[in-house]
Amino acid sequence: MASNDKLTSSRVAIIGAGVSGLAAAKHLAHHNPIVFEASDSIGGVWNSCTYETTKLQSTRVDYEFSDFPWPNRDDTTFPSYVEILDYLESYAKHFDLLKFMKFGSKVIEVRYTGDGGTPQMADLGAYSNSFPEKPVWEVAVQNGDAGEIQVCLISSH
Image (cartoon, rainbow, N blue to C red; front, side, top):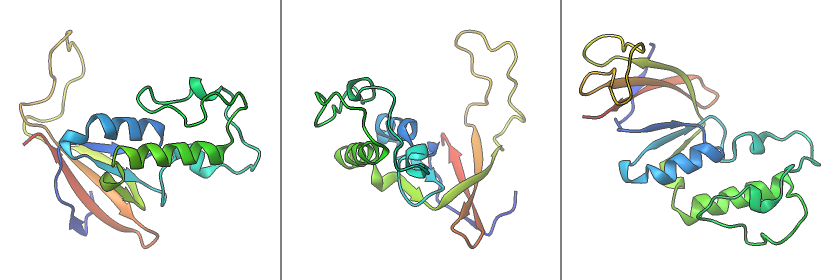
C-alpha cells in the first residue's frame, strides 16, 4: 500500500457519507469515527443525481430516520433529490456529524494488517471472533484531485 503520510488513527472508519454512512456515524459517534467521503459533501447517490427531475419513489415517512422526522412529513408528494439532500444535511447538522467527515477522501484500498495473520472467515459460529484480540486495518485514502495518498490506521487499541 503506497503512502505519503499517515493519518491519525481511529477505532472506527466509515466509507461514504450517504444515508447509511450518516446513520452509522450517528450511532458510532461515541467512538469518534472517521467518515471518508470521496465527494465534497454528504448525500451519497443523492449528491450525484444527473437529472433535475429525480425524485424519491417512496413517501417521506417511508424514507426518514426514526429519530429525525421530516419537517413536512405530512406532505404526500414524493421529495425531490434536492429536498432529500436538505433533509440529510439537516440530520447531519442536528446530530453534529459533520465534524467526523473527511470530504474529498476516496478510499482506494483497505488492508488487514493486525497481529495473527489473515482473518479466517469459515466456521465462525454464532458469537466467535475470527480476528485477533486487537485487529488493525490500514485504509488508503486518495485526497483531492492531486492524487496524494494517505494511510489511516483503524485499530481497537
